[in-house]
Image 1 (cartoon, one colour):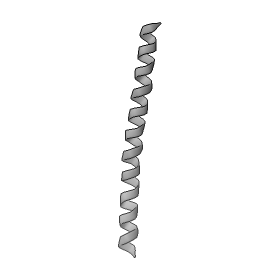
Image 2 (cartoon, helix red, strand yellow):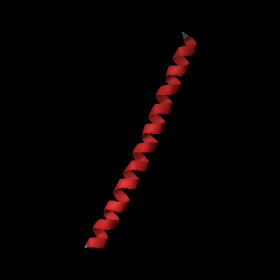
Image 3 (spheres, one colour):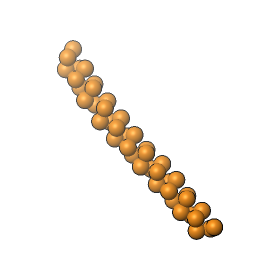
Image 4 (cartoon, rainbow, N blue to C red):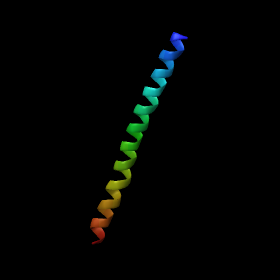
Length: 42
């Protein structure tokens, strides 16, 4: 029981961390080319 609780907490932290990292990378990857293209077209 205790061991599964630790594993569950680890997975929650792991998924949260990877999701935050992915969201950060996705936001940077999407926004930067979009804004640079937008500025270049002006």
